[in-house]
Image (tube, rainbow, N blue to C red):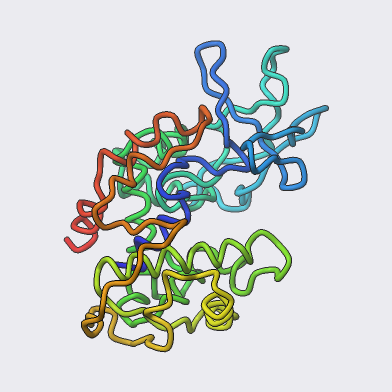
Length: 306
């Protein structure tokens, strides 16, 4: 399950981000409600996690992650979302009207929310009418990640999922299912090229802690080359011990080796309370440590195995 941990650690920014940054890096609490300010990459201050210009300002609307053709029982009803009709909420949207990434694996799209709700909630309407529960309730934050890993297929008629691909020994295929459209391959000069590096580093850390070898990178175009470059250029020090040793047997422990020095910037998961100490200084993640912390990584893995 190193592949599951590597992917979810990346998707949730080390379990500190329960909501997708570009849509809701910082929540705004007003009028007894929670609101988000959707942004595009050009107007987002990544260092301070702040959106300078809202996508719904000046009468514009937001409709990402909404496939309007897919309707119940195959997808939640969705459509263009405009800013909240109130002067003091200018540029803000109701998060329960949109289906952006949330939870440990950043569940997105109206079709995934209704399918996850049918399995995890009392009815399909639960996550259709209250998708932000995935960002605020631990059982949905982790439950949707486990549901996606075990049951979500990359396309209609394709009888496979992340769990099956991991058992087959293909980390690359798990990435293709999760975010293949943007990272298989990524734009060489865009954000997702850096995202691939981060994902690989987390995967290597997880594999080291769990004492398993890396799976192959087939199934995701360019991922193997990205791994080679990452190690050779020194950007993936956590992967050094794994370089040249991918295997189709993901449960096989690596040969005994001497301990390696702790990375100066990226701490090992072993022996550290990283889950509760890794926080970001903004309102969107103030309660995330309690959200994700209520289920430990060990518990999450145990749930998947069961």
